[in-house]
Image 1 (spheres, helix red, strand yellow):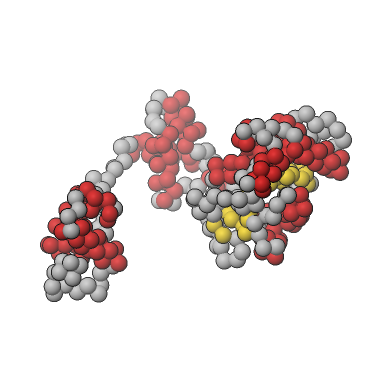
Image 2 (cartoon, helix red, strand yellow):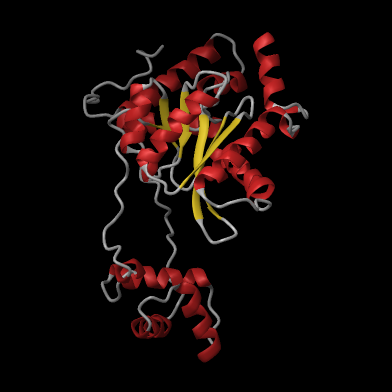
Length: 329
């Protein structure tokens, strides 16, 4: 059927794989209809709508494989600017007088001083046009951020985490993060935390800074404290989880997966754990603020968290109880 559904004298060599795949789906659809399948079942099998199949068949009958190429999806009627040139010139004037002001402040000035009510998004689009025309500099220019941040290249041990990657046993995709804590005397500490998604087992350690070497030390701490083998770790794209930390993960056979930018929702267990430590430990901490004493108290809190504190997500079992039941099952 695939061979018979073909227009002769059409050069297929220049056609894309997309066009050929669409032709194959048409052939499969027609084969299923010929074998007695309903149209609805055939459409479900090829994974396209009725209108799409009809459009593909029409285009193929008129133009051959070239008719099945992915066309330009730009709307026929694109959105045009809805502001007058007077507003653009006024925004330009305000921005030139105040180079670091963004769309929110400029919108407020227009409303207060000129009686012009415009949406923040409209002013933002005008600013984008002014930047593209070179009439104003982006705000980041004045803060020294003149370059564009390069995307991380995953050419070593770390890999990009993909949506849908979930653990099926303890020790897989342990979420790791760090938070800044301020003690009563003003001392700033960096608290690294790791949470297992299955058992909710948590480990934490306080440090004076957050670097890749410190993160490497926390990896050793995790390996000593967790009651099961650490198979893989999930982190954000912070520099503290690169270099020495990445090398340590590779050396210890621990998988390292980096979350997409601005995606804390995928690190929810450790984010929630950071909040728990903040409000159940640091808020009530009144002991000495030197790092040694703080660590001792923090380890006591973490031990109690894992072995005594009921956990709602575990049907009010402790992480230790849940892990023992997991082992026994």
